Length: 334
Image 1 (cartoon, helix red, strand yellow):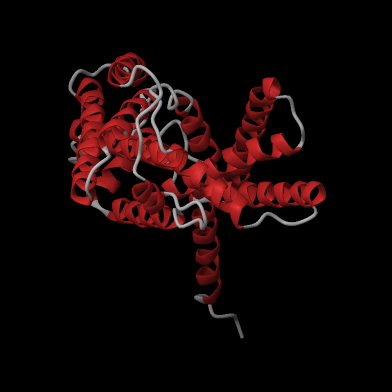
Image 2 (tube, helix red, strand yellow; image 1 turned 60 degrees about the vertical axis):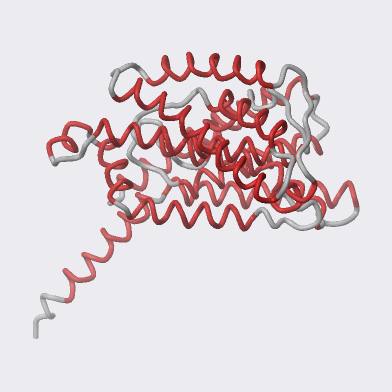
């Protein structure tokens, strides 16, 4: 008796769907695997040198130090999904960090109002980028490189010398030095991303990143979507600046400069495609923690700080190449 003809196609359909899901999330899966490996390597090196596994202090320090980068990476991801790039990250963080250090001191209501105004300032900076890229039709790399210098100059104007002060209660709320409670904010950010991903705006972000012309033909308002993407990113950079000030309990108008490059590194390590249309903010968060873990591993490996950038760059190239190969293998196996 011949086999039921419906059974084989059903099994056949399940395999392509599984391969499709794997292909769509290969970057995130690879980022999670690299993060797990880096944690194991770091814990092993720490245990060999300290005679114990990392405890609350080490875990809390790692989380608090990663928070600004993770938030910046989420903002960068939203921009990159639209086939853009944002080099103004460091400038916005510099400016909002300086504003937080100067104006946060006061009552609880005062701190809440100032925090909201700082986030709005970051959103306004992102809006400027979005208008120049969207309405002005200028290249994102040129626009954001120019605004990077502008925002850095404004930050120096606001806070010429490192200083200011962030209230202790405010610091404890955001970056508790005894417990990694900042993970709660990352969880909220991840939930926010999931909501955005399923919203019309999220669908539009991926649509114009995958094929701008086809998206426009289907009714997607590409200009508006890009403007909103840069605006949201600017708000996230402002939150990163606030966390940076809270972690340091003071401000520095140049301390955010390094986040321009590292936010892009975190995005790439998180499996987000720089060609747009593919990636996840959750992957970018993993990429941020990978970046921090690399620094920790290099420290415990007693690598001269002068050569740390070399090894970080080398690791990034290896991760990108390996990720590309995994992606091709997955796609070819469909």
